[in-house]
Length: 422
Image (cartoon, rainbow, N blue to C red; front, side, top):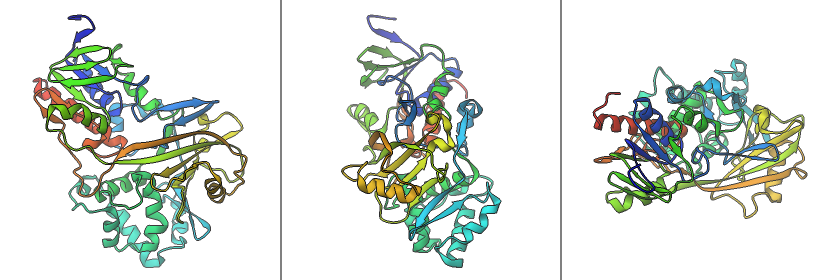
């Protein structure tokens, strides 16, 4: 300590979300003294889990896809106790439920895809060609594609409107948190690749286990919780708990907080538009139709997706109970997200009476993801000036993958500027 409530370290990191933790993990691994300042009461940022009456409630429905290349760089996936969802989705089309399973994981599912009541033979062939074009030895070709809105890419690929509206739009509304499909086709194509080659999972004890696992690899005392940063200055971070001096400062807060902190320094980019979602959790009795399959509705509906999540991850609910997670993209959320219309929709999708389901919690998240309208650069600069850096999913893609990659990129820039090799 160099004075009252003041300390000096090699690098100060603002924010203990995935990007900040990944950045700190890389820097600490090179022997640097790092301090991470986090305003919240736990690590994770937007990736947090609450325990309510024995149920584990993630703050918004989130999925950890094992296909993300960056994951294995920063965490031991086996230690997370991952629980996989059923490989596919079930979508309600014209009043009937149609299962769309991943034929890579379930080869016998190919017949069910051919029976999908949309597209016809030509439409299904166009969809298959599009998916095949997202695969291959690496994702590099995807990054080189001309970037257009996802809806335009699907049109050019010859995918008919009934396939788009019956399958692609309902699914990607939950991924992109938008209905217009104006998001980058590069990111959409990358996610197609991830959902085919990877598994959609959650840690058995909730999504917060991911940031906790990353933080566990940091030296004791690296993360300081309850430290709300008030100002970022060259070589200095001022928080309500004191001042941290460091030759390198990495702002890894969410994009809107980062903008507010960086704007006084000049040259801050406009904050991205936010995409919001409301997630409602219900406790239900077990029923024969409950499964770990994501349920979608192709009709005009307030429900974007819903799943009996504890059927895939039993640790999310007490014995004998089922935890149902339901998400609604902002723009379609009703005044009462647990009202009669939502309950009727859930009854249709789950095929059971929902009137007695217990409402556990509602999470309204107006800033769940930064928007990625096309054209979207897959890499934004992380070095802002001498000694100042930024990390977060807004520097790459709005995903766990993007947050982790941005953290590593920021750490690499710091190490290079400090004359250390990576």
